[in-house]
Image 1 (cartoon, rainbow, N blue to C red):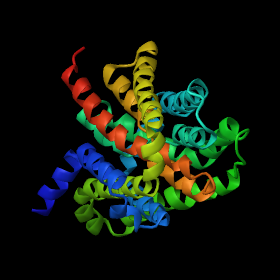
Image 2: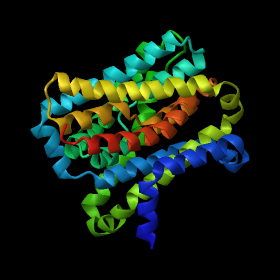
Image 3: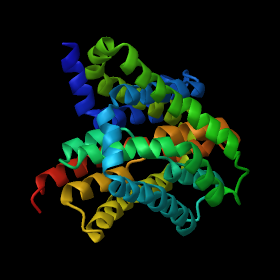
Length: 310
Protein backbone atom coordinates (compact mmCIF):
# COMPACT_ATOMS: atom_id res chain seq x y z
CA UNK A 1 0.00 0.00 0.00
CA UNK A 2 2.80 2.40 0.92
CA UNK A 3 4.60 1.63 -2.35
CA UNK A 4 1.41 2.33 -4.30
CA UNK A 5 1.02 5.69 -2.57
CA UNK A 6 4.67 6.54 -3.28
CA UNK A 7 4.26 5.56 -6.93
CA UNK A 8 1.14 7.74 -7.19
CA UNK A 9 2.94 10.75 -5.68
CA UNK A 10 5.95 10.40 -7.99
CA UNK A 11 3.77 9.87 -11.08
CA UNK A 12 1.44 12.81 -10.48
CA UNK A 13 3.96 15.25 -9.03
CA UNK A 14 3.14 18.00 -11.53
CA UNK A 15 -0.57 17.98 -10.65
CA UNK A 16 0.11 17.72 -6.91
CA UNK A 17 2.50 20.69 -7.02
CA UNK A 18 -0.03 22.70 -9.03
CA UNK A 19 -2.82 21.97 -6.53
CA UNK A 20 -0.60 22.86 -3.56
CA UNK A 21 0.56 26.07 -5.27
CA UNK A 22 -3.03 27.10 -6.00
CA UNK A 23 -4.07 26.33 -2.41
CA UNK A 24 -1.13 28.32 -1.01
CA UNK A 25 -1.91 31.20 -3.35
CA UNK A 26 -5.64 31.55 -2.62
CA UNK A 27 -5.59 30.23 0.99
CA UNK A 28 -2.19 31.43 2.28
CA UNK A 29 -2.94 30.34 5.86
CA UNK A 30 -2.70 26.72 4.72
CA UNK A 31 1.12 26.98 4.54
CA UNK A 32 1.93 30.43 5.91
CA UNK A 33 2.32 29.04 9.44
CA UNK A 34 5.46 27.18 8.30
CA UNK A 35 8.58 29.34 8.64
CA UNK A 36 10.62 29.96 5.49
CA UNK A 37 13.65 28.65 7.38
CA UNK A 38 12.15 25.18 6.85
CA UNK A 39 13.12 25.39 3.17
CA UNK A 40 16.75 24.50 3.89
CA UNK A 41 16.03 21.23 5.75
CA UNK A 42 13.55 20.25 3.02
CA UNK A 43 16.15 20.91 0.35
CA UNK A 44 18.62 18.91 2.43
CA UNK A 45 16.23 15.94 2.37
CA UNK A 46 16.13 16.09 -1.43
CA UNK A 47 19.92 16.25 -1.68
CA UNK A 48 20.32 13.47 0.90
CA UNK A 49 18.11 11.30 -1.29
CA UNK A 50 20.31 12.11 -4.25
CA UNK A 51 23.36 10.95 -2.26
CA UNK A 52 21.61 7.70 -1.34
CA UNK A 53 20.90 6.91 -4.99
CA UNK A 54 24.27 7.87 -6.51
CA UNK A 55 26.49 4.88 -7.20
CA UNK A 56 30.07 4.18 -8.36
CA UNK A 57 28.54 3.53 -11.78
CA UNK A 58 27.53 7.20 -11.96
CA UNK A 59 31.10 8.36 -11.33
CA UNK A 60 32.31 5.97 -14.02
CA UNK A 61 29.88 7.64 -16.46
CA UNK A 62 31.52 10.99 -15.72
CA UNK A 63 35.02 9.59 -16.18
CA UNK A 64 34.22 7.49 -19.25
CA UNK A 65 32.23 10.22 -21.06
CA UNK A 66 34.00 13.47 -20.15
CA UNK A 67 33.11 15.14 -23.47
CA UNK A 68 29.35 14.60 -23.00
CA UNK A 69 29.47 15.76 -19.38
CA UNK A 70 31.56 18.83 -20.31
CA UNK A 71 29.13 19.81 -23.08
CA UNK A 72 26.21 19.36 -20.71
CA UNK A 73 27.69 21.40 -17.88
CA UNK A 74 28.81 24.20 -20.21
CA UNK A 75 25.30 24.36 -21.62
CA UNK A 76 23.80 24.26 -18.12
CA UNK A 77 25.88 27.15 -16.82
CA UNK A 78 25.72 29.34 -19.93
CA UNK A 79 22.29 28.90 -21.57
CA UNK A 80 20.07 29.36 -18.50
CA UNK A 81 22.04 32.19 -16.83
CA UNK A 82 22.28 34.17 -20.08
CA UNK A 83 18.61 33.57 -20.89
CA UNK A 84 17.71 34.78 -17.39
CA UNK A 85 19.77 37.94 -17.76
CA UNK A 86 18.37 38.60 -21.25
CA UNK A 87 14.75 38.26 -20.14
CA UNK A 88 15.21 40.57 -17.17
CA UNK A 89 16.36 43.17 -19.72
CA UNK A 90 13.71 42.45 -22.38
CA UNK A 91 10.82 42.55 -19.88
CA UNK A 92 12.34 45.36 -17.78
CA UNK A 93 11.74 43.40 -14.59
CA UNK A 94 11.92 45.19 -11.22
CA UNK A 95 15.18 44.59 -9.39
CA UNK A 96 13.79 42.03 -6.92
CA UNK A 97 12.16 39.88 -9.59
CA UNK A 98 15.17 40.20 -11.89
CA UNK A 99 17.37 38.92 -9.07
CA UNK A 100 15.06 35.94 -8.56
CA UNK A 101 15.07 35.01 -12.25
CA UNK A 102 18.87 35.24 -12.36
CA UNK A 103 19.14 33.07 -9.23
CA UNK A 104 17.07 30.36 -10.92
CA UNK A 105 19.17 30.57 -14.08
CA UNK A 106 22.47 30.24 -12.19
CA UNK A 107 21.49 27.15 -10.19
CA UNK A 108 22.55 23.61 -11.17
CA UNK A 109 20.24 21.02 -12.70
CA UNK A 110 17.38 19.68 -10.57
CA UNK A 111 17.10 16.07 -9.42
CA UNK A 112 13.63 15.82 -10.99
CA UNK A 113 15.37 15.99 -14.38
CA UNK A 114 16.58 12.40 -13.94
CA UNK A 115 13.03 11.10 -13.55
CA UNK A 116 11.83 13.15 -16.53
CA UNK A 117 14.74 11.92 -18.67
CA UNK A 118 13.84 8.33 -17.81
CA UNK A 119 10.19 8.91 -18.78
CA UNK A 120 11.31 10.67 -21.98
CA UNK A 121 13.50 7.66 -22.90
CA UNK A 122 16.61 9.83 -22.93
CA UNK A 123 20.14 8.92 -21.88
CA UNK A 124 19.53 8.42 -18.16
CA UNK A 125 23.19 7.74 -17.29
CA UNK A 126 24.19 11.03 -18.93
CA UNK A 127 21.40 12.87 -17.11
CA UNK A 128 22.47 11.54 -13.70
CA UNK A 129 26.12 12.31 -14.47
CA UNK A 130 25.29 15.87 -15.53
CA UNK A 131 23.10 16.51 -12.48
CA UNK A 132 25.78 15.22 -10.12
CA UNK A 133 28.56 17.19 -11.82
CA UNK A 134 26.67 20.49 -12.05
CA UNK A 135 25.59 20.10 -8.41
CA UNK A 136 29.19 19.54 -7.26
CA UNK A 137 30.32 22.56 -9.30
CA UNK A 138 27.52 24.75 -7.96
CA UNK A 139 29.28 26.02 -4.79
CA UNK A 140 31.84 27.75 -6.99
CA UNK A 141 29.98 28.46 -10.22
CA UNK A 142 26.57 29.60 -8.94
CA UNK A 143 27.82 32.44 -6.65
CA UNK A 144 30.23 33.62 -9.35
CA UNK A 145 27.49 33.73 -12.00
CA UNK A 146 25.07 35.53 -9.68
CA UNK A 147 27.77 38.09 -8.89
CA UNK A 148 28.55 38.63 -12.59
CA UNK A 149 24.92 38.97 -13.69
CA UNK A 150 23.29 40.59 -10.66
CA UNK A 151 26.23 42.26 -8.91
CA UNK A 152 25.36 45.65 -10.40
CA UNK A 153 21.81 45.45 -8.98
CA UNK A 154 22.45 44.17 -5.43
CA UNK A 155 25.34 43.29 -3.14
CA UNK A 156 26.20 39.61 -3.64
CA UNK A 157 27.91 37.73 -0.81
CA UNK A 158 29.70 35.14 -2.95
CA UNK A 159 31.50 33.47 -0.03
CA UNK A 160 28.30 33.25 1.99
CA UNK A 161 26.46 31.73 -0.98
CA UNK A 162 29.27 29.23 -1.48
CA UNK A 163 29.01 28.12 2.16
CA UNK A 164 25.20 27.93 1.97
CA UNK A 165 25.36 25.63 -1.06
CA UNK A 166 27.95 23.45 0.68
CA UNK A 167 25.77 23.15 3.80
CA UNK A 168 22.42 22.74 2.05
CA UNK A 169 23.46 20.71 -1.01
CA UNK A 170 26.91 19.14 -0.81
CA UNK A 171 26.88 18.03 2.86
CA UNK A 172 23.56 16.08 2.57
CA UNK A 173 24.80 14.38 -0.62
CA UNK A 174 27.97 13.29 1.18
CA UNK A 175 25.86 12.04 4.10
CA UNK A 176 23.84 9.96 1.65
CA UNK A 177 27.00 8.49 0.12
CA UNK A 178 28.30 7.61 3.60
CA UNK A 179 25.03 5.84 4.40
CA UNK A 180 25.42 3.83 1.20
CA UNK A 181 28.93 2.87 2.28
CA UNK A 182 28.32 1.94 5.91
CA UNK A 183 24.66 0.86 6.10
CA UNK A 184 23.95 -0.55 2.61
CA UNK A 185 21.11 -2.88 3.64
CA UNK A 186 19.09 -0.10 5.24
CA UNK A 187 19.82 2.16 2.28
CA UNK A 188 18.43 -0.43 -0.16
CA UNK A 189 15.20 -0.58 1.83
CA UNK A 190 14.80 3.21 1.82
CA UNK A 191 15.66 3.93 -1.83
CA UNK A 192 12.28 2.82 -3.35
CA UNK A 193 10.52 5.48 -1.27
CA UNK A 194 12.90 8.34 -2.11
CA UNK A 195 11.15 9.69 -5.26
CA UNK A 196 7.94 10.18 -3.27
CA UNK A 197 9.79 11.72 -0.31
CA UNK A 198 11.66 14.13 -2.57
CA UNK A 199 8.41 14.98 -4.34
CA UNK A 200 6.73 15.83 -1.03
CA UNK A 201 9.72 17.96 -0.02
CA UNK A 202 9.55 19.87 -3.34
CA UNK A 203 5.81 20.35 -2.86
CA UNK A 204 6.31 21.72 0.65
CA UNK A 205 8.94 24.20 -0.60
CA UNK A 206 6.49 25.45 -3.22
CA UNK A 207 3.67 25.76 -0.69
CA UNK A 208 5.82 27.69 1.79
CA UNK A 209 7.24 30.18 -0.70
CA UNK A 210 3.94 30.80 -2.51
CA UNK A 211 1.94 31.27 0.73
CA UNK A 212 4.42 33.79 2.15
CA UNK A 213 4.29 35.81 -1.09
CA UNK A 214 0.65 35.23 -2.08
CA UNK A 215 -0.45 38.87 -2.01
CA UNK A 216 2.45 40.02 -4.17
CA UNK A 217 1.93 37.13 -6.57
CA UNK A 218 -1.75 37.95 -7.02
CA UNK A 219 -1.06 41.63 -7.69
CA UNK A 220 1.86 41.26 -10.08
CA UNK A 221 2.51 37.59 -10.67
CA UNK A 222 1.36 37.26 -14.27
CA UNK A 223 4.55 38.73 -15.70
CA UNK A 224 6.69 36.49 -13.49
CA UNK A 225 4.78 33.41 -14.66
CA UNK A 226 5.28 34.43 -18.30
CA UNK A 227 9.03 34.99 -17.83
CA UNK A 228 9.47 31.69 -15.96
CA UNK A 229 7.59 29.72 -18.61
CA UNK A 230 9.64 31.28 -21.42
CA UNK A 231 12.87 30.71 -19.49
CA UNK A 232 12.10 27.02 -19.03
CA UNK A 233 10.80 26.36 -22.55
CA UNK A 234 13.70 28.16 -24.22
CA UNK A 235 16.13 26.19 -22.04
CA UNK A 236 14.51 22.91 -23.10
CA UNK A 237 14.59 23.93 -26.77
CA UNK A 238 18.13 25.30 -26.83
CA UNK A 239 19.41 22.29 -24.90
CA UNK A 240 17.98 19.94 -27.52
CA UNK A 241 19.19 22.06 -30.44
CA UNK A 242 22.70 22.21 -28.91
CA UNK A 243 22.80 18.43 -29.00
CA UNK A 244 21.59 18.41 -32.60
CA UNK A 245 24.22 20.95 -33.68
CA UNK A 246 26.91 18.80 -32.07
CA UNK A 247 25.42 15.76 -33.84
CA UNK A 248 24.78 13.86 -30.65
CA UNK A 249 22.48 10.85 -30.63
CA UNK A 250 18.81 11.57 -29.98
CA UNK A 251 18.90 10.06 -26.47
CA UNK A 252 21.74 12.42 -25.55
CA UNK A 253 19.88 15.39 -27.06
CA UNK A 254 16.84 14.56 -24.92
CA UNK A 255 18.95 14.31 -21.76
CA UNK A 256 20.72 17.59 -22.59
CA UNK A 257 17.40 19.33 -23.25
CA UNK A 258 15.91 18.28 -19.92
CA UNK A 259 19.08 18.92 -17.91
CA UNK A 260 19.44 22.43 -19.30
CA UNK A 261 15.76 23.33 -18.99
CA UNK A 262 15.08 21.98 -15.48
CA UNK A 263 16.78 23.88 -12.67
CA UNK A 264 17.21 23.26 -8.94
CA UNK A 265 14.68 25.99 -8.25
CA UNK A 266 14.39 24.91 -4.61
CA UNK A 267 18.01 26.01 -4.17
CA UNK A 268 17.14 29.34 -5.78
CA UNK A 269 14.35 29.83 -3.21
CA UNK A 270 16.73 28.91 -0.41
CA UNK A 271 19.46 31.31 -1.55
CA UNK A 272 16.90 34.08 -1.99
CA UNK A 273 15.56 33.53 1.54
CA UNK A 274 19.01 33.40 3.16
CA UNK A 275 21.06 35.98 1.29
CA UNK A 276 18.46 38.36 -0.14
CA UNK A 277 15.90 38.54 2.67
CA UNK A 278 15.58 42.30 2.10
CA UNK A 279 14.24 41.48 -1.38
CA UNK A 280 11.30 39.14 -0.58
CA UNK A 281 10.08 39.01 -4.18
CA UNK A 282 13.37 37.37 -5.21
CA UNK A 283 12.03 34.00 -3.99
CA UNK A 284 8.96 34.11 -6.25
CA UNK A 285 10.56 33.10 -9.60
CA UNK A 286 12.03 30.02 -7.93
CA UNK A 287 8.63 29.05 -6.52
CA UNK A 288 6.90 29.55 -9.87
CA UNK A 289 9.66 27.62 -11.64
CA UNK A 290 9.21 24.73 -9.15
CA UNK A 291 5.56 24.50 -10.13
CA UNK A 292 5.95 25.00 -13.85
CA UNK A 293 8.97 22.82 -14.66
CA UNK A 294 7.27 19.77 -13.18
CA UNK A 295 4.31 20.37 -15.49
CA UNK A 296 6.41 21.13 -18.58
CA UNK A 297 8.70 18.19 -17.74
CA UNK A 298 5.79 15.77 -17.78
CA UNK A 299 4.59 17.22 -21.10
CA UNK A 300 7.99 17.11 -22.88
CA UNK A 301 8.60 13.59 -21.55
CA UNK A 302 5.47 12.44 -23.38
CA UNK A 303 6.49 14.33 -26.51
CA UNK A 304 10.03 12.96 -26.57
CA UNK A 305 8.92 9.42 -25.75
CA UNK A 306 6.20 9.55 -28.39
CA UNK A 307 8.68 10.67 -31.08
CA UNK A 308 11.50 8.39 -30.01
CA UNK A 309 12.37 7.26 -33.56
CA UNK A 310 12.46 10.74 -35.08
